[in-house]
Length: 250
Image 1 (cartoon, rainbow, N blue to C red):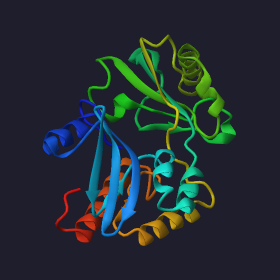
Image 2 (image 1 turned 180 degrees about the vertical axis):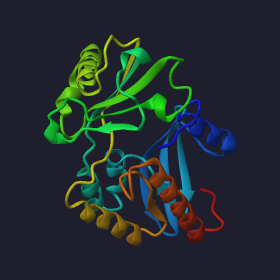
Image 3 (image 1 turned 120 degrees about the horizontal axis):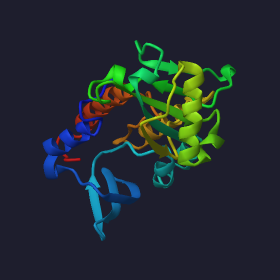
Image 4 (image 1 turned 135 degrees about the vertical axis):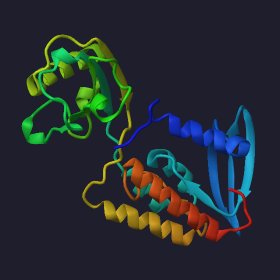
């Protein structure tokens, strides 16, 4: 695990400053076509339509958004992308006084196996892992609810989630008192699931790449979901893009 003093937003902010105007943001791609010698990309940006011609395309958008764009290139690949499941997950951030947490927070936190029949997937002891996550004499805890195991819990209100997680932490960690801080963030489509048979989906993506020279899949649904995996895969894809076309700006 890793982060920054000011949170993970530090990384995209730094990338944005380094890249400047070389990257378009707030642009929505509406179509992707494979033409002789490259690709045609159409979309909308700031209320205006645009058209781009390029020799290579590296896509990192979620599978459920990519599927309709890939369909004109390969219907089987689009169908495979639609099979990828993104269950909902709610993150519940709670702050407690250190005196209200009896257990020594001397690790990263804990994950909960299904057989424990709990209502949380796990908890990260954020203030133990990273500095500046909680004021002095306080602790910050990040818990996860829902997922493929209990997607229905995602539908609970923020107040219900805070109360539910607080009770679970009382039972598991001997937390007392009430949270002095709480915040809920919801991810309706969270982490792609590498379910049994997932290799067939990856094989289909690789077949599509071979048949559409210059197309590269680069997302957390291929090659690993962790930030480290995504960074490494991104570097590998960047090298492939460079080698596939040395004279085309992407």
